[in-house]
Image (cartoon, rainbow, N blue to C red):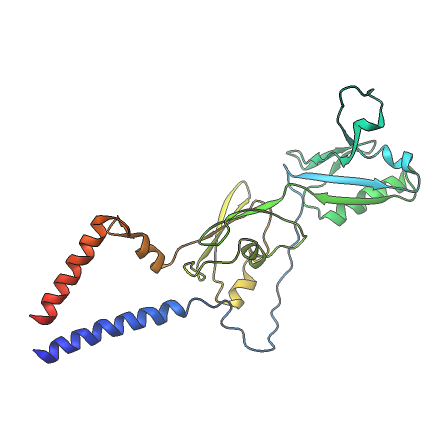
Length: 267
């Protein structure tokens, strides 16, 4: 009988130890990467989509000539004439990509920009200005204004973050959110993407570099949503049989469980 009690105690101890080891094994990122290993990943660049806002600025040695293609934001100050220079600021209004993927650019008219990278949009507008002999020395600068991704769940700083570069990886977005907490499931990160008229769901294992870099969501796109699930430890901390960790019911359940184990072991 004593041997049975000792065996039961050892079994419970081993279960706890194995559970701890199993959890710790899922903490480190890209565990399959050794030293001096190169991973190739197809680089995906952020492109314009319907609903995006695009800033386009045309510069030239002749400011008056370039001004025709820039749309300044005017703010009328009380007490100042409408044509006063005090009514102008240094901003340039943005173009909103319509449902057909087009913008209405001064003089050039309708320009299709959906699916194009920043430099492609800039190159096209510059070539059109030169080809039509409108601005021979045009320098065109294009920026995307309202693009961002959302990061939720077990991260230190959840929220929406602006895309400030042409290539934004999943790891970049998680870094912006302060990285995963110790309770985040690194092997099952969810990315929700709006595409083909609906939503697509992708699962990513951060612990496996090979599958991470091969994932279609390794490079994020605007409006992607990243969700990090809580692991089992966090789930058990927040609820046990539907009872909150701080609730009286939880502690009563725990006391009952410990009493039952004590009876079984020391009976």
